[in-house]
Amino acid sequence: MNLGYVRVSTKEQNTERQIKKMKELGIEDRYIFIDKQSGKDFNRPQYQALRLIIREGDLLYLDALDRLGRDYDGIIREWKLITRELNADIVVLENETLFDSRKFRTMGDLGKLMEDQFLSLLSYVAEQERKKTKLRQAEGIEIALNNGVKFGRPKQKITTEFVNAYDEWKAERITAVGAMKRVNMKPNTFYRRVADYESGSLLVSQS
Image (cartoon, rainbow, N blue to C red; front, side, top):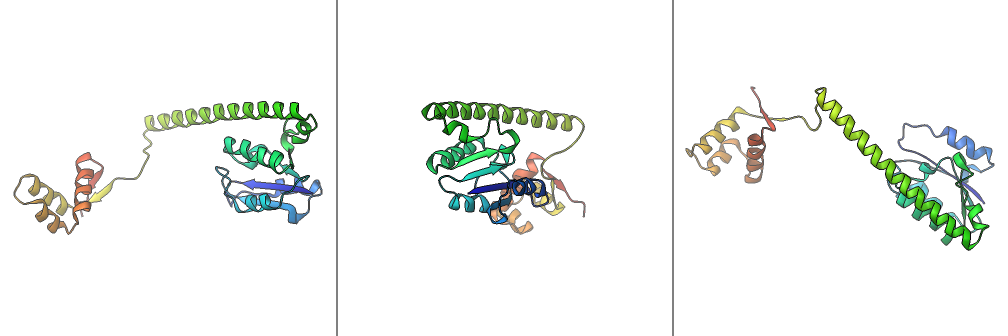
């Protein structure tokens, strides 16, 4: 039986192009599994449904390898599960020359060895890509900071009442408990707000 798996990362993205490819292969609608979810892990409802029905001798089609997922260690694990434990096959349409488990299967033990090496190489390349992506992100953040872009949560505001109570407490004119009563705060909240105020992460409201 031929199966198709289609994935996009968000609900807003269109799946039609991938679905069209699956239908052109003659795959029935009921055997095309579609997720609109991030590929960071494999806890996706339609992928899990696919895993439940795929059997020995079945052939799973993907438009591209990253449609299976973005976690390449996980991709290797899922690839081996499907092709070796379940004895089904996978074809990646974007590059059938490399990504077709049937070719490795026909080579017997040598094919498994070659497939292991191929998947290890895939993992290494993916890791390098992840590092490049992180580096580009870091460089982008540095450029943005140099251009005055600010990241993170905006500074919270506090009242002048808190500042006055804080000053009185620091001058030892009132106790911490007295300061808490003035601003109607519990100890944890009060000391957290004190730490934020002293670190400069709070703005004083003029209202």
